Amino acid sequence: MSSEIYIKKYDFNKYTTDILDSNKYWSQRPIVYIINNEEEAYIWETIDASVRVNQHRQNTKRRVLTTFNLITTDEFNKSVILDLESFLISHMSADNKYKLQNWNWWLQNHNYYNKEYYQQQFKKIRNKLKELNIVKQDIYKLENSNLFKYSPYKSLTDEQLTIVSEIRKQLIIDINNWVQSTFMVKWWAGTGKTILWIYLMKLLLEIRENQTELTEEIENIDETIYENIEDFLNSNEIINKLKIWLVIPMDNLRKILQTDVFKNIPWLSPNNVLSPHDVAKSKEKWDILIVDEAHRLRQRKNLTQYKTFDEDNERLNLWNNGTELDWIFKKSKYQLFLYDKNQTIKPTDIEREVFENIENQPHTHIYNLNSQLRCFWWDKYISYIKKIFSNNPPIQKEIFNQEFWYELKLFDDVNNMIETIKSKNLEYWLCRNLAWYSRKWKTKKIKNKPRNFEETHNRIKKWNYDINIDWYKYIRNTQYSWWINEPNSINEIWCIHTTQWFDLNYTWLIIWNDLRYNYDRWLYVDKNNYFDVKWKNATSEDELMAYIINIYITMCTRWMRWTYIYACDKWLREYLSKFIDKA
Image (cartoon, rainbow, N blue to C red; front, top):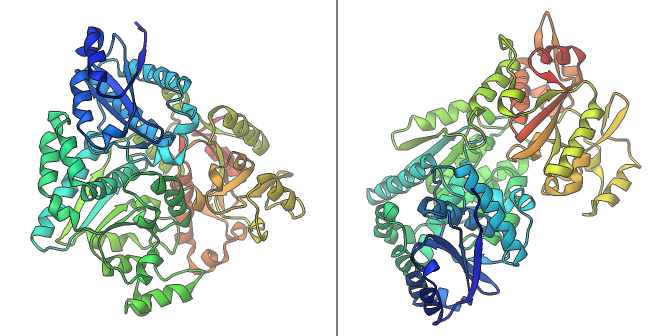
């Protein structure tokens, strides 16, 4: 079925139209094209290349581009080129060789006949583009990068696009009616909530920034989404006035978005990303604050720095009763919370009941993000894992490995599992070792940690290793932020606080002796093997059990491909073997 892929290169000037018209093969067929110079690029699709070139030559931004690259095969139809257009935009934005002139608002998932076949063809096209030096990175490395995973140039599902549209429309209604309101998107792991809010934020900011460019762009947008865009144009006067910022409670994720994503995307800036502390101490008041991972906002409980927290409360006249959630409400007119009640993992996290109260307020708008992007059987997998980590276990073993081509494996030898993960990392990259924070973290005491990984580990050798299991010695993560993306971090064991929001390819999970099993008590917490003193002394055994179970369930969902598990307690291993195949 495969046909030849054509990639033709022309100068982009006043003669380009004549050249295309002289070749009837290109004049009336579905194509995707890339127009670029040394620094910028623009990607689009059409069934009439010469007409589109004329339109682009009238556009002042497009006129500075110098090269026209035309891409097609004999098999392309309209559905295929729409999908290829989205594919190239998402990949070239993350490739970061060019600054894209494209907007992100029309990108949408397209379902059509034989889609899987054509997507394999897309990868061949991208390889040819690399040979022609139009892109620079290998596709697999690129698809594992933060810039690709968090790019606003991703195609939205129908559900995501509907939520974006409904939030925007409701926001305009509330603003016009002088109603201050709250928006809450409730999500499950694997539903693409990060893509949704980055897409929405870039969309609001770019609409605000350039009305002229928007008017020129709309003339060339597919008519099936024109109505939605036209409605957006009509509300542009309101959008122009909005101050929109993003709040990320977790330091690691915030730094990654600032350094790897926002500084590399047009209309976005690292300064758009705030911590809750930044919100509290600022004299600014925002129109909209978008809060990702809202379940990780903190209350005044089990903190490491009460002084700073109390000072922020005092600034806002909240004294000792305020929470980071209160700070968001104090400093904004409208709030958008991305919230998952199942990913609360610390006593400092604000209780579910507080968010349930917000849901019940008259001016709160609720949206549910349910459609899975990771795999069609994700709900079945999550349900199965939750039952395993409960005292109401599954009735029978689910064979995910055969039915779904997914490896959920239990290991009896911890080092065998680590070596297996290392070998997978050579093939798939971004495979990591995970564990809960139930060991003393000695490596964090190393001063002036260098970026050079080998030098760091040479220093650690002078210390006792953090982790000893069955005579094997391992190193706790030497850095709190950004280091998980470094290839050599495969040699470290990472805590949930540094991995909760990452999608990894393979994960290896250690279950410490803090979670045990016996036939009298079933699953239970062993406080003698739990080393976080703040939690140990400030929570009841039932509360601690609930947190630990939730943590291990959450860490079982960090994978994109496979999960390997090792339990230190031999009775727990025996229990898990009833439900998980052994390696």
